[in-house]
Image 1 (cartoon, one colour):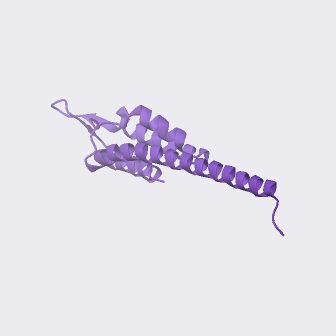
Image 2 (image 1 turned 90 degrees about the vertical axis):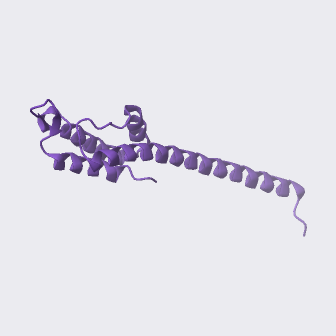
Image 3 (image 1 turned 135 degrees about the vertical axis):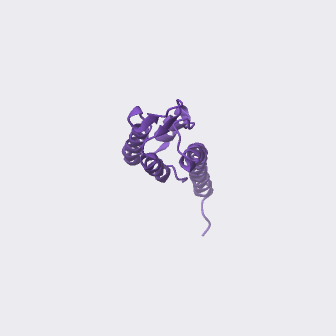
Length: 127
């Protein structure tokens, strides 16, 4: 028994629309992941440079990168990222710096800085 033409057309249209929506959804997810990984890579590079030889003169990751990275995180990881970022800022605070005889500034406890960078590095892994 042949299938009526209107059922064939309707099923073809429905299948095409479903494919269009699923393909678009997957493309959007891929684009978001690509943006996230790009920002995560820039932050990771800055943190790894700072971890090699901690110095108060280290270049911080860009504030906009940190902002966009935080916004790209799922809500359940933002609290951990905020806590790690706060720890990192405290490790760079004046309480952990000392000034030498010739005016050079260094950290009192570089382990505190390295530990705070390690916490951030765990959260900046690529997707």
